[in-house]
Image (cartoon, rainbow, N blue to C red; front, side, top):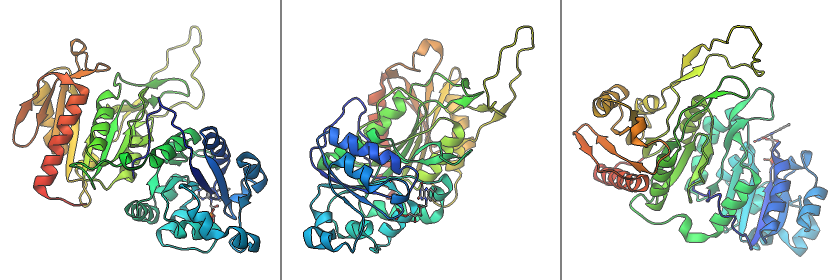
Length: 422
Ligand SMILES: Cc1cc2nc3c(=O)[nH]c(=O)nc-3n(C[C@H](O)[C@H](O)[C@H](O)COP(=O)(O)O)c2cc1C
């Protein structure tokens, strides 16, 4: 997706005019908060509600929060005389579509204009930021995938969707609308102009990166985790974005800020990470730096497991998690041209990495020593060996940022030499 997330540590201002198009999804209520967040940052916010959106939020609420008239109807004569859909489309600095329903994305991708929202979107020459929200099956449906790819090619910016619980009972996956603050930050980033897409050796390339640990639930309060901080994966995402790539970062739970200019999908479990990676593809390069848990608890408890005095301690039965690296590296059609895995080892680092590269059909493995003495997990330095079909190159100890830059540089050079296109 066109990279839009921005460092969480900076709350940027949005002093320009924003036209917020609210689509007909459950997440429409979050867009009311978005109006507030944008105005707090100095933006003037006008709102268009689709007909379906009015089933979820009222023009009255949107008007009260925006302190502006709310627009709902393409054929409202007053509007056409006073302002009209063409002026709505042009008298703004940014259009945000939130929630961007599957329906709105489809209409945008095919250039339909049969209501006010879609007519404005077709008539505009301003940047458009879409915050999709829908059921995970709708999001992963081939039609939606096609529409999103088309819209990305048309220059539409995306924020989210995130992974999480859906409004529908028992449903979870990729499809939750990004939070209001994340959308406000993304808006500031889009309005920030050319720096959101620096030119570089990876311009026009899509890079998918995983980072951080996964959390595998035991019950609602406990989980299996590992010591990965996400520092290396996040550094690679930042380096790839700085090299001009469109970057999708699928991140497990970390305490790091989102790298600038990167679309971040936040997940918890290995299964969610796999689903997010699959929906993010196709890509030119996939880099799997996350420390994905090898096992999950077969059936996590719905309620907190109680400690009862004198009773037996619970037994956890584990099941193997999906192998994300292997499932992407062994994809037939639409396999990324360059698939890079990470191997965190505590002994026989290079031989284990060589075996892993072959078994999983990865092109390169970045092997690192994560034994307690190495201080790799959570630290700022890394000592890695790059294992390829041609051999092994051991890099000197260096910062994770430097490892990231060098890896991205080499991946870019490899791609250029192989002249691949997705
Ligand atoms: C209760 C309910 C919740 C819905 N939630 C969503 C949603 O989150 N995302 C989505 O794409 N469509 C959702 N829909 C379907 C849309 O409302 C429907 O496709 C509508 O035509 C969208 O119109 P719009 O894109 O013009 O706003 C929902 C429908 C209902 C009845």
